[in-house]
Length: 591
Image (cartoon, rainbow, N blue to C red):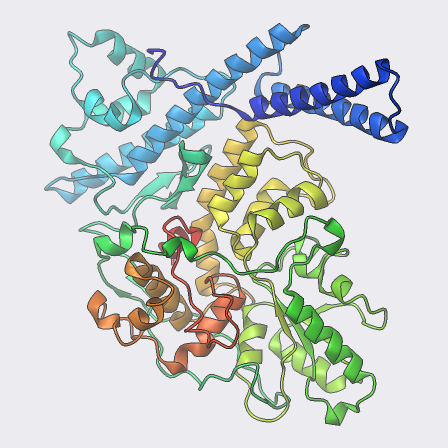
């Protein structure tokens, strides 16, 4: 392969070496001061040297994760080694780029059976490229830049291109099998809408629309969700919703629960428009960021809930100590999250930074994770002010109570900022993640708790044994596995446990916000979803109305939808458009 085809890109090993070099420079400067007889803090100097030793170990671990046989003795040798590993990382990224390109396109053929056979060959080629990329040593991919690769490969001829054809056949047999069966006019790139089933590496099971790692910031994106033949089913709208009741309104102690029903009816299929499938950045669309707790750099003040919610909880607890149960306005404190399991990985229940720790009141009993029915029993039997945690079902139940006492005591785990993600993984779990890896996590999840929780389970399978380091090969594996897990996670959202499950109308709202975000600003998105919804020509989805306020509020509190900071706005008025790269845009395609 031509040297110019493989661009030299920094790997995680490079980032670690740079940290080590910077720390060594700092230590040398202090040694110079000591040699000059200057007075320095002993603890500070010892601390800097200790950090240097830790970074040195990190570098050895990082190199070993990429090449366990590597040896070196001098600075020149280690720099040469890291350069070689950078080049290997660029080659690996090239394989994954081609996998993404193939997965994002589709095959056209007048015979559906032949088309499906070609798609199966394409899927096998995608899986082969991913598998190759996970190997310590793998063959290079011949040919031009990835954007021009398919056209180049389809133009190969036995006589004039024999070496390249032989290389493909020997090292990428499934890719060669796909290419040799194709004609250039049969391939349609990602500008088309396609229905893709891609084989998960290492298994014989075909997963639906997985994600493939890409070159740009090592992110992953799914292939398009439908094509002219296969149409994506959209959620059936339920219009019989209870009137919205918000936290400011007084509601009574519950006598019945409102549990989400499973989605058992068949979904009405409808073709997706190119506008939905190929989103463009809207004017002001990048303002669609998560609104969460301002995060201090001081880990002692780290909180996953807003300061306002913690203050409200604290005030309610103080009032409960002096007011009889029958006279209390707030009957329970509810901490809700879409990230609940496993329990020892749940931010709501974290021993140092969870909801109970934030309140810092020794009189509060252990937090109970409960369904609406269980919460009702707890509230009825408790003399004090119970602290209950739960998921979507508990939140929906709390938001739809009617008349009487209020349940203003709701604290929600909304979207994580990138700084909060860094605190979660790097400080709380002491994982030495490179800045690029933190950025990858944020790009893949947009800080949505449901998706962050899925990433957490892949990075830290055993919560009491977090890894100290994630090498490049392991990181590629995690991101690829995350992509394959999204389809199953979407299935849980549709049909899973009540704490995760969304109603059909709630899923429909997610899809509507995704569609309207393409041409909306924070000022126009509410109107585009309601009185102007007809312009999107989606009659199967009813425009938003006041009856949807509770659904929107629930989606915002679960961190699925971004919301503005202005106080006093109704949930619909507080909606923000999704950014063009928001992870929810990709996830919605599975729903």
